Structure formats: C-alpha cells, structure tokens
Image (cartoon, rainbow, N blue to C red; front, side):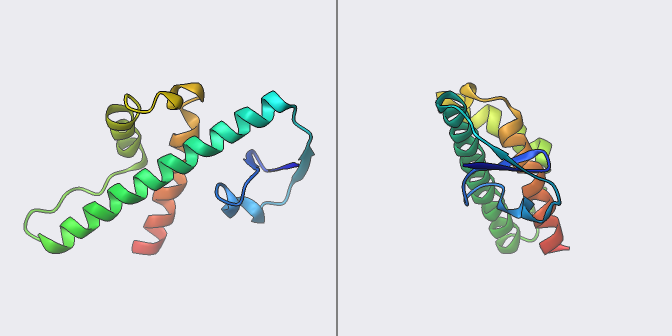
Length: 118
C-alpha cells in the first residue's frame, strides 16, 4: 500500500519519511507497473541522497582540515549539476526516471543541512 502526503509519495521508510507531518493523506492502489516506477523513483532518490551526503561530508572534512583552502559548500543546483556530470553517465538507470527525483532530494537535503549547520 502506498500513501501520499501532500505532493510527495511515501512508499518506503528510507525515502521521504520527513514529510509525515503534512496534513493531507490519500491511499493509493498502484498497479504492478506503477509500483515498479515508484520503486525506481525511491531508488534513484535514495542513491542521490547518499551520494550527496558522501560529497558534502568530504567537503566539510576538507574545510576542517584545510581552513586556508576551503571549498565552497554546494547548493542543490550545484549538487544536481555534479550528479549529472559524474554519476549519471556511469549509472544508466538514472535515465529511467525524471530528473525531479534526485533534484527534489537535493533541495530537501541542503535545507536540512542548512538547518543543522547554521
């Protein structure tokens, strides 16, 4: 069973769990093809989140170890451009879902990091 909160789908506890506080809730009964597409979206968003986390952790570690040669902290747009340049050519399954799956993940990821860091 898949639940929709606001405009983002929640079908697994790995992705989009942070949206549970929204007020609207709808129950969906997807077909097998739709379940496959939902799983692909979740997989791409999960991979993009983990890749963005890895990259930003490395940037923060570099900035702590080398305060005189700091790297600019990336925005969601920067992360998406890097993902398209570095990750998408190696992972063909990124092309099976729209670009909004990883980009939406990056927007929320950066917003959460800004909340934690500032």
